[in-house]
Length: 104
Image 1 (cartoon, rainbow, N blue to C red):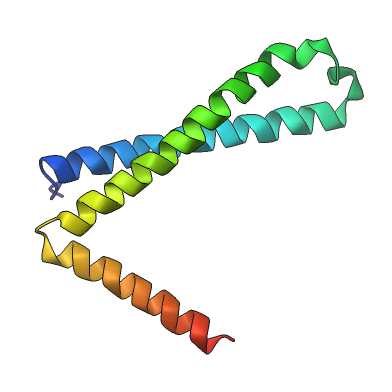
Image 2: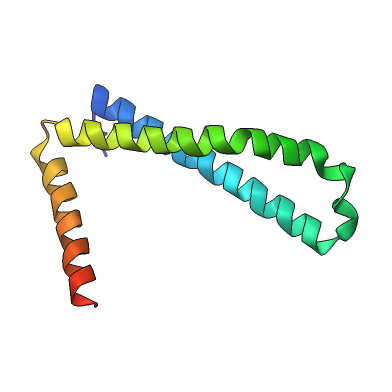
């Protein structure tokens, strides 16, 4: 199967994928750390300070960075000359609007 994207579209697609993986890794780190700390209260001490500080440092960078990359990717997609992509975005928004009105 051939990769259909090229240029700015491909770059935005790769960056949003990397940002998503980074956000999942940080979120998973928080989930793992909290589950370990709640299972064994001995870890609610200075034993986990390094991991706690690392996650505190990385969280705003990764989450805000991923949000910025996502907005940039959406901007690239909207400006794209590829008609299929733009119609897909509009169709998805239309479907969500229809479902939200129909499920009230």
